[in-house]
Every structure is written in structure tokens, then in C-alpha cells.
Image (cartoon, rainbow, N blue to C red; front, side):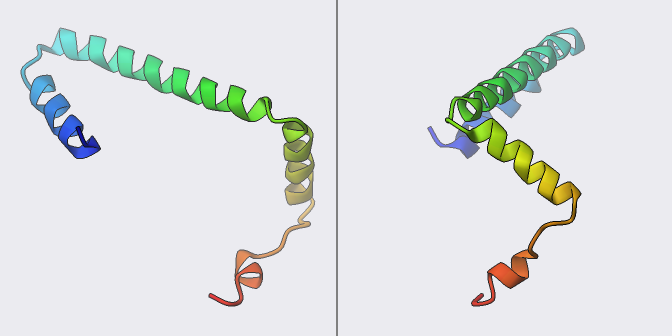
Length: 76
């Protein structure tokens, strides 16, 4: 099933629920969203050297040591 079909089916079903049940669905969706975000973070942190490289990039950005993307993509 495609994403748009799944979303349409979910919306159809959501419209039939009571307010109380909708609150339960929202709580569950928030849980799933948080879980997916946590899994993605764990996956990134599992990459050797990622955390150090990320912290270095944050320090460089904070110090203004950045290159505008237009300069990097001059050919576009």
C-alpha cells in the first residue's frame, strides 16, 4: 500500500473515533514519533567518529567558520 493510500485509510478511520479515542491515538502517534527519532539518533551515534565530527561542526558553525551553500554549488 502506498503512503498516500495509508494516510487516506488512517484519516477515514480517525474520523469515526470519539474525542477520547482520538486523544489515545495522538498519544500513541507521539510515542511512535519519539521512538523513531530515538532510533535514528542511535543509528547515527553508532557511526564511528560521528559524535566528535558533529560536535566539531557545531563549534565551526557557532564560530562562523562556514561556507555558503551557493559557493559550494556554483555549477547549479
